[in-house]
Image: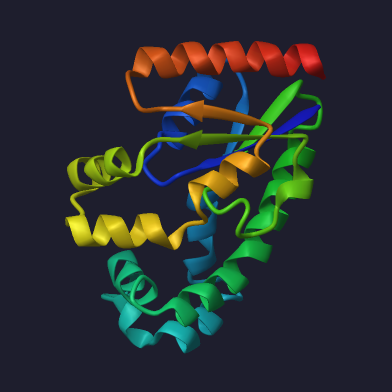
Length: 196
C-alpha cells in the first residue's frame, strides 16, 4: 500500500485534487472534515477547547466555526494551543483510516497542516499543491467570501510555501485551468505507481 500525504498552500486546489483521486478509485481521508468531529457533544476534547476559546464559541447549542476562526486568526497563542489538541486526534484518525484501507494499492490523506503537525513519517510520498499568493487570495475572496485582509491572514498563518515545496516528494502548480490540474494529477499517479 502506498500512503500519500496531500498538502499545500491554502486555496491551492487540494480539495479538487482529492476529488480527482476519488474519481480514480483512491480512498481519501479528509482531515478538515475529521477534525470537526472533535467538536461533537460526546467528544472528550470539547471541554478543553471551551476552556481554551471560551463559551462564546457555542451559539444555540452548536459550535460556531466563524467565532473559532475569529479567535484563532487574531490570537497566535490560542491558534497553536488549539492545534496541539487537534493534531494528535487527527493523526490517530489517519492511522485508523489506513488500517481500514490496508488492502488498497494507494490511499491518500488530505492534510492542510501536514508539516506544521509533523505528520511526514505517516506517508510514503508527500504531494504539495501550490499557487501564487495573489491567486490564492483572489480564490479565497471569490469562493469563500473572505475580505482581502482575512484572506492574507489565513495565507500568512501557514508554513511558507517554499518550505513546503522543499519538503515535498512531488509538487503540482495549480495556477491555471482545471484541465491542466487533471492532466498533472493523472501523470503524477502514474509516476507514483511506477516508482513504488
